[in-house]
Image (cartoon, rainbow, N blue to C red; front, side, top):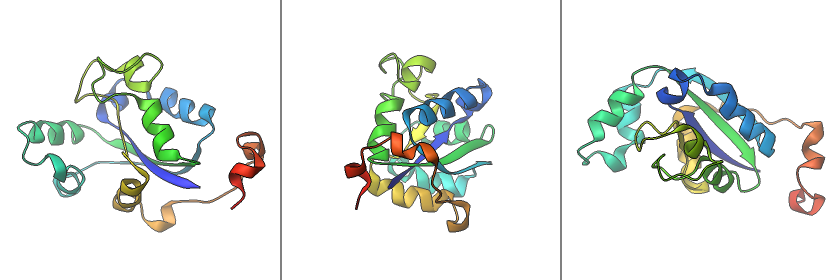
Length: 155
């Protein structure tokens, strides 16, 4: 199964959307492999948002992400990164489609509720950035047989 990273940003924490967001991923059929609350600092944000370091809004993003703790999660499933990206919607909450997390809960480009890995490849490095190996779990759940056809899970 593929894994991907999801961060509930301060805008989700402050607006009390934690349970609603987690509920959507569980209802979809993704499996939670790890979750923790943490306070982000400049060191981790400089690495995580390195691709934005030359943008004029870089400091604003970092300040927002440090304004309160975040909740980092590792979700697992077939095509998990793609599934999660589809569920969260466009980066700009004003453009995100209704039914997506950003489309339902965001009116902002920056305060857009969640961060999610943009690909299975980037998820690997992002998960390592936020989780120690012993903080991630593999387990079976009885409902898995009803999430996928047997041919989808046979390797």
